[in-house]
Amino acid sequence: MSSLSNGTSKPLDRSNLIPFSSRLREGRALAQDVWSIFNVANLPADCINLGQGYMNFSPPKWITEAATEALNTVAPNHYSHPRGRIRLRDALKTFYEPLFGRSLDVESEILVTSGANEGQYSVFTAFLEQGDEVIMFEPFFDQYLPSVTFNGGKPVYVPLHPPAAHIENPTSDDWTINIDEIRSAITSRTKMIIVNTPHNPIGKVFTRKELEAIAAIAEEFNLLVMSDEVYDCLVFDNKEHVRIATLPGMWDRTVTVGSAGKAFAATGWRIGWLIAPKYIIQPTLAATTRIVFCSNSPLQEAAAAGLEQANDRNFFEIQRAEYAERRAILVDAFDKLGMKYTLPEGSYFILLDISDVDFPEDYPFPESVLGRGRDFRACWFIAMEVGISSIPVSEFYCEEHANIGEAYARFAFCKDTDTLKAAADRFQGLKKFLKH
Ligand SMILES: Cc1ncc(COP(=O)(O)O)c(C=O)c1O
Figure 1 (cartoon, rainbow, N blue to C red):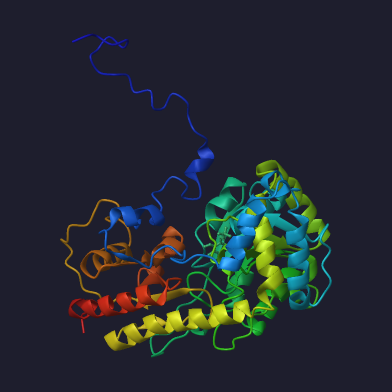
Figure 2 (figure 1 turned 30 degrees about the vertical axis):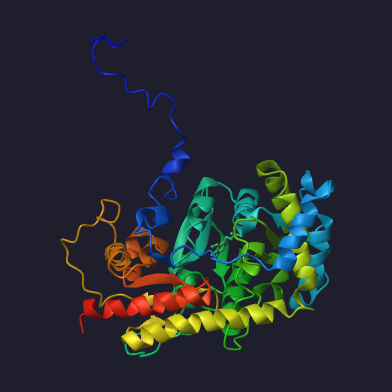
């Protein structure tokens, strides 16, 4: 046996030769994320995937045709302006002006980004100083956390309270905020508040009254409001989608976030946008230009085609009805099972109360779910025994409050009806594992 340079037969551990940045220790960036644990690759091959929120269908053909056309044209194969391609900015202007009730300047008030995620990241880069605090409602879209901490910010959590136990058929409206709790979370370092409506994972569509109360606080403490409205096209039951930027005085301090991924069933395209006053867009443009320079050019053209034709084709209305039908399939399945769930009024997620799912503690769970919340084990058990994957909701909470999320599993209904009907049949197999 040959001796190695350390004079022993043991190879030198060189894995720490180049230390990585300590910022990765923040914002759970190194923790195994829930998406990789509940990844199709780790689950039985025939498991129905209602976990991660992406569609199992393509964008409409008239939109993918626009993508093909863009790929066959010279200019959209190259760098776009960092603000975004003018065709898309024009389409965003035309589409959103009536919804915001104001004119939008394509040069200074609209910014195309590489998905909503990168747009949000760029806002944090542009506005956060080291130690600035960002208020977010729990449960929260998990990406906010590292995006804030990578940019030196400190997340501060305010709860969305789960429906009271006596409510028999809760809807997402029964998840409530307490304005006094927001007020007491504010310190001299509070810079921003993130509002996500319709909400992931609850499906809550914030009411005008709730948004007015948040707006009053933002005015009182001079906060920047990030309004994450990526599910704005998926609001059900005639519920009103209120844009906080349209409330009195709020345009001046709000950046509204949108996503072509959610609007056009194209989550892999990575096209998103921000709408805000010039003095919010300009610093964010400076950040995004140095982060990605510009976004995917051909798919900006396709997203533009989508927005240009959506109203004439009644696209969002038809899509909303299709999603309502998809939601109904899961709701019926849960009703048949007699399980409690939160009826979502927006987005494409539904929270199932899994408190009654009874599984043996000595079930052969993998290491990755042991030591996590009960919901991780319940979701794993449901995937293995019933053949449907979901996402444990404690992942959307900070460690301190994870126990609140442990009562729920999130199922995504952005799937075709055949898949959802097959899932509905399988769900009945859960009956024999229920406590009551
Ligand atoms: C609430 C919320 N915001 C932002 C995003 C990110 O959107 P995009 O895929 O456009 O980056 C998601 C995606 O799941 C989301 O649920």
